[in-house]
Image (tube, rainbow, N blue to C red; front, top):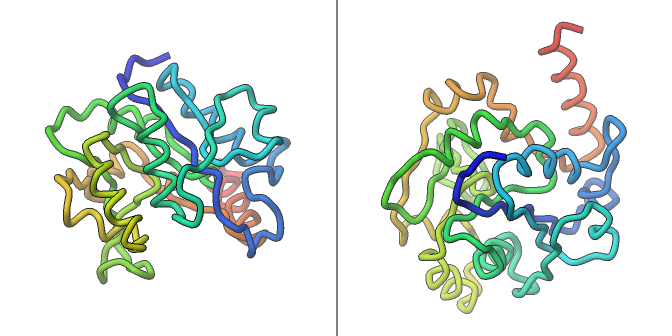
Length: 210
């Protein structure tokens, strides 16, 4: 186990409307999605926990923390994670990212910067974010110093995670740096629907030369 000095929170929330079932528990390659995620991140720290308390989540053997901000979306999940973590720094990832890269996560954890957030920034637009770039808000390391800003936004009903970055000290990791550790940026692929799951399987087979 690496001594990264940080906690890891896996967010299991979301309505999973496009998937038609709880994404965290959807089975792929013989295991639920969330189990793929915790298997990778558990090598980083002794404090891994899931945010979003459903009875089925307890089967994986990790601490399960109820969301303290119902209706707060992923922003509320991050705030919950910061309050529940054993360490000052918290890596937050989503439960639907089956291709997380341990090398990239370890490289991010090794960055010693006096900032509130260490976050990947990839090219390409995403809804609700500035044109031509995307901040990977659910593959980022947050410090507890973020918590007052998050709670202010939650109280105001301003739930877009990317919007809080303007109020925080941010270390953005650009694509060339990211690709040195995860060449195909597979880490940032989310599974939101059955077709996404099929696409991930096809991509993995292609990269493996099948």
